[in-house]
Amino acid sequence: MDWDKPGGDFVADASSTVTVKGAGSYTWESTDRLVTDVQGWLDDPAGNIGWLLLGDESQSRSAKRFDSRNHDTEQNRPVLVVNYVA
Image (cartoon, rainbow, N blue to C red):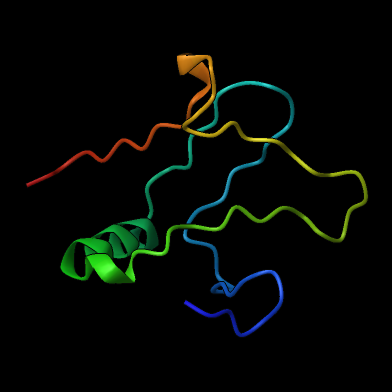
């Protein structure tokens, strides 16, 4: 996928938000938008380009670090939990 804008394309309205302060675990609560995103990926796996974690770019020194799935410490790796509700 080619980006139309430097730094990546994204929808201006967030699917979910959370305030990240210090080190620790964070949970983005489920929203209708998150459910729509996941359902869209199930319906069209090729359209799954993931989520962008976007910080408050208007603030200086506000960068946050998230560990990747390849982190040496398993507990630091990100986890996506999807609860199916019938």
